[in-house]
Length: 175
Length: 145
Image 1: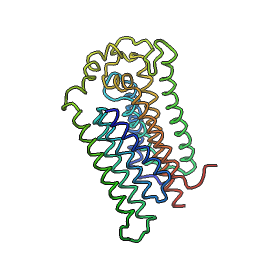
Image 2 (image 1 turned 90 degrees about the horizontal axis):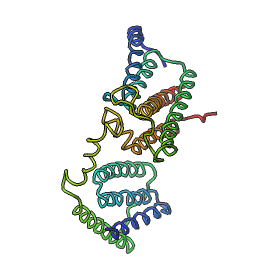
Image 3 (image 1 turned 60 degrees about the vertical axis):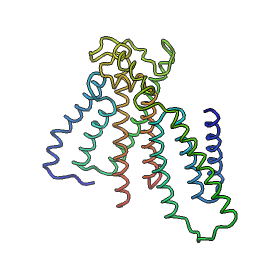
Image 4 (image 1 turned 90 degrees about the vertical axis):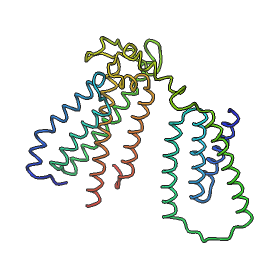
């Protein structure tokens, strides 16, 4: 398992480095996609299928939007016949896809069946919540006490979203 | 930004305060009844947005209001962070520790830090939603000028 995760993290590092140094914006976007989809398999191996599903959805939507924007705005390249380098790239793509599918299959096998094992944290949350947090509302107890880190992250995401909106929608600079 | 008709204005005068109070109720009772900081904050922002939509507002006034809401938003998230860090100073010295005495479950002052988190997260959510709304309105006014 550690070996598989190391290989995937290696893929992620190579993809991220290529995304920085790529000459073409489209190549950089797709190389960024390698990082996201490798992260999906890492989540599956670490037994977090819910995070993996979220990561697949977010990564796919982001990648499609970015590719659409790049194709619409700046990409102008005539279609050319594949040369020797093109065949090497295609072969590399197939090798990488097969490797990722193999790891995907492997990580699926290690998951527990639905509803058992991974949900064992829910029991102590429900049983001892009122004594531990003093909150009658169990949801608030979980959100602000047991899972305080998550809530802090959510609130920070909201602040970051507002910062992004203010940055994009500002026509004149604020003096 | 122009206001709406007299009917909308009168109705808004009647219910905006009630909506505001209901948002505060949802936030304060977050540890007792369903709801909490996130839900109550959205209701609070709704009462402000209702007034701005109904009465209209001048451009400069909107800018001033946006400055205020940005300030409250940033301050509230900072206070939430400080409350979380304060767990590192008392008791078990754990991040996000609930170190305030908990009291009797079911009373309005109970559950230690949870009402404080609820209040400041509520302020933060309300200010964030209001800031996004105001930014969109100001953007439209600047475009049309």
